[in-house]
Length: 209
Image (cartoon, one colour):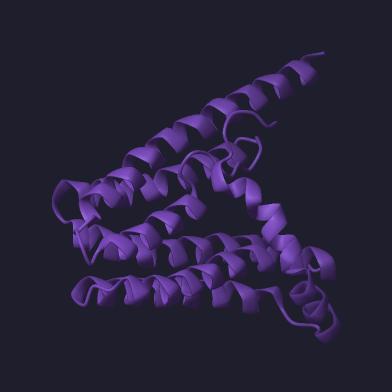
């Protein structure tokens, strides 16, 4: 079921289409989808390191390498599933690796952002960056859809990090960035649970009918 805002996640199909050449090359060369999972984690780790350095030596120029690292992080998260489907090698363990890799890549940058924000806002950012995924996996475990998107999903969190790096030379924006991630994540989790609850209710009605 779809409904409500999908945020920047709505561009995932477009972004994956732009990476279609990489998918085709991976299929021809027999590249494992796990390679892209690892690339996504590496991109997230690189973005985290660059965010830390940019906070110590603020310059708007850091936004470019941070953006590239986050693009690799998102590209890896998109390509592992796309390559698995294109090669016909989907497997349950691949789903597990995809989810763990996605969370690790995201957590790396969020840990640095939380450290830079400090205090309660840092904790709020960590909680808010995790709640949407917890909601989605809980719904999937109950037989509902594996929902993505929403007001502040992983794509929006990446955008918040880039904006924070851009603003850092003039003003330390980390508290505000952490607040957007944290509060936005809570709203996103609620949005996903609402949509998921409707899907589960419809499925139950269909089964009863």
